[in-house]
Length: 290
Image 1 (tube, one colour):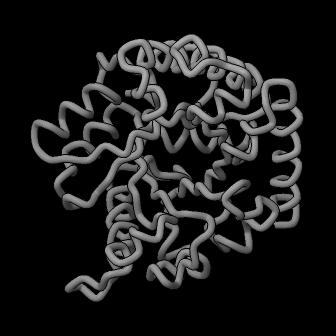
Image 2: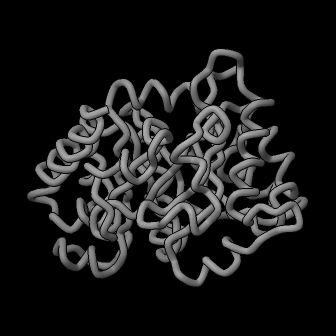
């Protein structure tokens, strides 16, 4: 049986730290790099970014939509990028936000996480809003494959708040219910002694956790943070500061994947190395103060 995603994530944290670089080649960014909005420009952008990341950071997070918009040629770039990232020793989180039920969700699993999947990745983002339990079979299969699943929980877009902050019949917000459900799955699927589970939550770094019913993440690790990890977008260009990681997530901060994209990518091909190093320095200030 392969080692779990949680184990691999923990080892990556130890070797490289908690920074994750998103690879988001939208049209405006390609243009600012002097590249064409084409599969050729996409390939140069993606592999230049990968070259800058490798050896500095341990995790990348390609945003699937920016590859998908170029059709089959874009998907070919994504396939090649994922293989090259694996060969470079990186963890690959594909940000696809897939979510469905029954055979449709199974097909998504086969495409992204299955044994014969055309895309090589370690974890996939998913949407639980057709019902968290509708994907229980997928969590089980992911555990068997040593893959991770990262579930949308509390997102920074204002349109999501009314749903995610809604109170369910059990008295929990939707976000808190997702968090607690993840904790239960991690407890069942983890090998005793492992520090991190393989199933985590997307929680925006710019949010006030209390508004989403997630305040216990900051203050009560024995109850709330048991083996759950967090993927936290929102650092850098969206306003959250890496050196405030511990202040934002409290006791859960050692389990946070701190994701940046625009604040690194906007530096351009000539300065992306320096931008990554600056982000690493800022994040290390938070970690060293623990």
